Amino acid sequence: MYQRGVLYFRNGKIDDAKRQLESLLEMLRNDQKQSSSNQNVDNNYQVAKAELQLSLVYRDAGNIDKAKQLAADAVSIAQNSNLKNVATTGLIDLGLALLSRGDLDEAGQYFQQALTFAQRDQSKVDINRAQLALGRLSFERSNNDQTISLLEPVLAFFEPAGYRRETSIALSVLGRAHQDKGEDEIALKLFERQLKLATESSDQSGIGDSHMNIAYLRGMNQDMFIDALSHLDEKLKIDQERGGATRGIAFDQMNRGNFLWQIGRYDEARAALDAAFQIANAPEAQYKAVMAWLHLINARIALSQLRYADAKKEGQLALDVSADKFPDVTLQAKYSIGLADAFTGAAQPGRKLCEEAVEMAKKTNSRPLITSAQLALAEAMLLNKDAPAALQNAIETQKIFGQSGQKDSEWRALLIAARANDQAGDKSAARDYATRADKACSELQSLWGADAYQSYLRRPDIDMYRKQLVQLTGAK
Image (tube, rainbow, N blue to C red; front, side):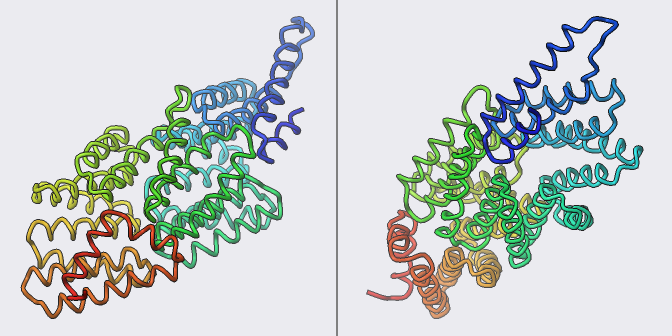
C-alpha cells in the first residue's frame, strides 16, 4: 500500500496517492488500537514513513499546514522510537514544507538539525540530502555562490549513484543559481540534463519542473516570452493531469499571466491571473508568495496601461503581502510604485524608491532583478530631469541587455539614452540612439512572430514610447 502511494505520487496522481496513504495510516492506527498491552503491534516505522510521504502529497496539494503537521508527527514518532534515518528524513521534509511557505529561518533550523543527525549516524545519503536542502535554502536567500558550492558535491554524489529524484532537484537549483548570475548557457545545459533525466525516468514532477526552469530562463533572462509560454503550457498540462497539484497550477497560471501581458495579450493574462487567485486565495492554501506576485503583476500591468493610481495601489498591496519575506517581489513593487510616482509628477520620491529597489536588487545577486531595477531607475532619473544620471544607467543596462539578447529591454534602454541626450541638448546623439532603439525594437518581430509583435505594439506604454521614437528620429 505504501509503495502504491509512492508510485501514485511520482506519477502525478495526487488524489490517488492521498487516498492510498490515508487508507494505509488508518489501517496502521487501527492495528495499534486493537492490539493488547501484551501483544503490541510495533508499526511505528510504517506510521512514520507513511506520514512523511503523505506530508509531501499535502505539500504539493497546497495544504502546507497539514504537511507540516504530518511531518512533525513523523519526526516525533521516529525520535521516540530511535528510528534514526526516518527522523532525519522527517526533519528535512518538515523544513521543506516551511520553505515552500517562505519561513526560511525556521526551515533552516530543521535542515541543520537533520544534518547533525545524519553526521552523527554517519549516513552519507542522509548527509547529502541535508546538504541538498541547505542548498535550496541558500538559493532562496539569494546566495548563489554558496548554493553552487553546496550542490556541486551533492550532484556528484547522487547522479552516479542513481538517485534520480535528488539528482533532478540538484540540477534544477544549480541551474537557477547560474541563471541568477547571468550564466545562461550553463543554466540551460543543467535544465536540459534535468529534462532528459526526468523524461527517461517518467518523473512527471521533474519534467514539469524542468519546463518551468526553461520558461524562467527564456522569459526573464532573454525576453523570449513566446518560448517561455510554450514551456509553461507544458508545465500547466502536467500539473492539471496530476490531479490535486493546486500549488503547481497556481504558480503556472501566475507565470503565464506575467508573460502574456508583456506581449499585450491582456485578456488572456487576466484569465490566467484570475485562475491563480482562485487557488491562492482559498482558506487552506496560504500561498502568500503567489498572492504577493499577483499584486505585483497587476501593478506592472497597470503601469503598462498608464493607470498609475492602480499601479501604486497594487504595488502597495504587493509590499504588504510580501512583508519582506519575498525580496524579489518587494524590490519590483518598490520600483513599480516609484515609476508611477514619477509619471504623475512626484519625480523625486519616485526616484528614491527606484534607488532603494536597485540597492535591494544588488543584494539578491540576480542579474535580471538588478538590470530591471536599473532600467526603472534610469527612467525615473529622466523624469526627474537628471539627464546625465539617466544616460549613464541606461547605457550600463543596454550593454548587458545586448549581451543577453534581451531586445525588449535593450530598445527601451536605448530610448531612454536617446531621450536623455535630447534633454541635455545633444540632438545628434539623441537621433543616433533613437535609430538604434528603433532597429532593436523591429527585431522583436522576427524573434516573436508577427502576431505577438503587433499585440505588443498595442500596449499603451509601448505606443507612447514608439511615438517618442518618431519625434526623436524625425521619421514620418
